[in-house]
Length: 430
Ligand SMILES: [Zn+2]
Image (cartoon, rainbow, N blue to C red; front, side, top):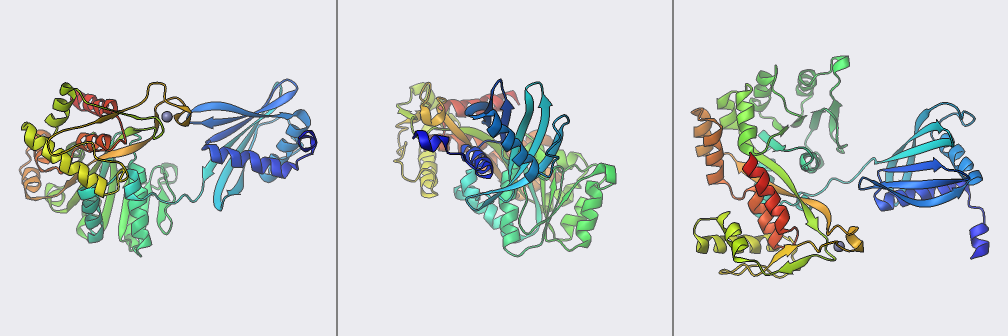
């Protein structure tokens, strides 16, 4: 053991292993910090810094020189800030590492930011789409025309859904172009444009150029209609498939916003194919989650979300849970409901376990509201009946609301009753 530890490790191998380890941990950044007499390596994982390794001064100096060499920085410069980029590969995946070097009192501090350069697009199933919602999206995508609205609050997974849908279209041979601010994912096979106001590259300019270049599917992210509502209308009317992403709490707000900011109501009624609203719930740790028998109060609360008639509600809920299981949502687990009863609910174990960093939760999953255009929706749009009528109609025609989706996922053991309740609180504040 002793002899092995003392064996000098080549600095290139050391840098490789430090970055490899960061990727394994899922770290966004690696901090290399000089301390008195030694150096610490800390990894930024899920927002907090974890100290993992120490190096001697001479090892550290060699490491910094190696990082500077790889990033095309001046090796002998120790008194000024420098930044550069190097490329890294790990298990056949490519990463871009941006290195910043800053002189501090104790020496030079280096921060490495790790970015996956060609991540695989997620499947819609892995994002949490299932059953009828999934089928509706797939059918609409195959039409290759109209407007698809992707909405939700910040950080609820909109861009991951777009990444998945547009990658599928690009893969199937369609010409896909985007105009984005900012570009969030590199879509293989697509032509992506970053909005740049300083250089006059506005959304309008980008879209005009895209239209000249014969694109089949176009993404505008975010979709603001200011000054370009006519251009958007022409794009849709000409038969392109247009995706627009915007911040809105639900589909009614998103559609209402578009019509209110200048999108012609006839175009909206005829061409809006689909509105997908996103929210997110935390997923329970698979290792320590707990099933429990629900209280009467909880059962009533859940059933009310589906119907005022409790018998109908439990029947519907059971059918939905079976469909979710058939769709592969925790397919290995037995059902939590029968036609007459909710048998169990799920919660996080207090203080979790080692696997979930003592949180009880690990990761998150999307919950969705999918609205397909239909006669009733068109009538409301054409009659200018306003947001509340739109919301009422959408509620009537909806296969599943985000909260109902969350309830089904909770019954399948993916999330907890308290996460479902959290969604309700947000809704009630709307
Ligand atoms: Zn756990």
